[in-house]
Structures are given as structure tokens and as C-alpha cells.
Length: 305
Image (cartoon, rainbow, N blue to C red):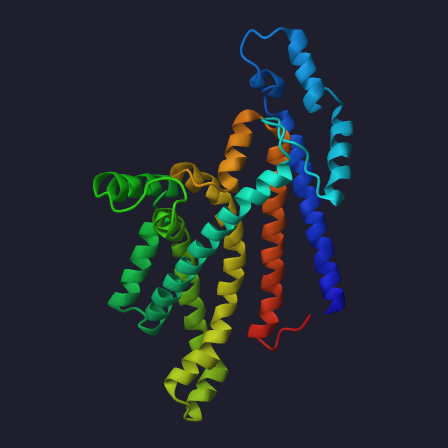
């Protein structure tokens, strides 16, 4: 187990380093001078050069890259080009809102997918099964940006039941969580349905039924633990999608999260902020998948590291 933890930690560090390096190179290949974007049109070239010196973009790329890597062990992600505030401080203020939104959306989507998927598997090829697959197909073909706008128009503008923007209370979670949950639901439903169908045909399930174990115990103990393994894997992978998809959802609902912070940084060519947000998203994603690996052994004793 210790060797596995050391190996997985090394892989996580390598992935994060690759993401940081790729992001550093990519953002500097995009056209647009941050110094010119920070100053009004017509600003003299001497002022622009002074701004470049102030924010550090006048240095060679390898020097900027070295400075960025040198600050990472200390938790120093640099300072934002806009306002000069530490990037780490801004991310620490915005990240909890994104994590809270993502956790609620994943919990809602996983609960609904489990109910729908298990119900479809237990009534395979019935009307319930076909209805579940149809709903999954409709949800999968619905773009999240269109769904978010439609939810705002119906429930916030026309009916005035829910707030349309900002994080003002529990009711403000409903529309963004619904948008993310519908996007996550199709793949989760199909995974739960298929894994439950496969588990129902396993030898240990047939043996449990042959021993006269009640059906509800067979489903809850012998089937559910095995069938949940693919779901756990998918939830770990979907965590990255939630963090990435939060850029669109947070921009629609003006949610004060890391997605809004990243989008604003991209528009302003704020290199330190872009690098910081991508770094944090990469760390969260790798940590979630690391936890998923550890959960495998708890769900299935046959898995050992």
C-alpha cells in the first residue's frame, strides 16, 4: 500500500507539473499584450514599457517560467495583473463557492442517476427502462449553456420563483445545480443501469439467491457494492468536468467561483491568474481521482494495491 501511495503521489505531481507547463506556454502564445490591455488606447509606448516591467512580462520566457516555479513550493502563485492582489488570496476566496456548487450538483446527479438507473435495470426492456434511456438521450443532447439560459428565462424572469444571478442564499443554488446535474445525468444513468444489469448476472448473486437470502439483501449487499465501482470511477472523472464546466455555468449565473475568475483572467490576459486557476483545478482533479482509487478497496475486498 505504501508503494502504491508513493507511486500515485509521483504521478499526481507529474500531471500537475505538465498542466502548469502547458498552461504557461499556451497563454503566452495567445495574441494580446497584457500591458496594452491594462492601459487606455493611445497610451505612449514608454508607459506601456513601464507597465511591462512592473508586471514582469518584459523578461525572457525562461526567466518568467523559473520565477513561477520557484514560487510554487512557497504557495506563491504571483500577483494578479489587475489590482496587484496575490493570486492565491483571490483563489482561496472564490474556490469554496465552486467546490460547494460542484459537490451539491454531483450529489443531486448521483442520487437521481442511482434511482433511475437501478429502476431501469430491475425492469429491463420495460416502459420504465425505455423512458429512462429516452430521458438520458434528451439530457445528453441539451447544451448546458442553452439550458442555463432557458432556466433563467422561465423560473427567474417569467415566473420570478428563483434568483437568476449571484450567490445570495440556498435558493440561488437551484438553477445552477439543475444545469450541471442535467448535464451529468445521462452518462451516470447509463453507467448505473449497465453495471447493475451486469452485477445481477454474477455468480455470487445467483449463489446468494440460491441460499435463500431475501431479495432486498441481495440487492443492497451483494449487487450494490459491486455495481457501484463503475459509478465511483465515473464520479471521479466527472469531477473534472464539473470544474471545467463551471466556467460556462458560473458565467451564466454570475456565480462567484473559480470559473468566473478564470474567464475574467482569460479576457484580461492575466497570466498569473490563469496559471493559478488551472493549477488549482488540476490539483483538485488529481486528488479526487486519488481518493477514488482508495475507495475501490473499501467497496471490493478483491482489489488490493
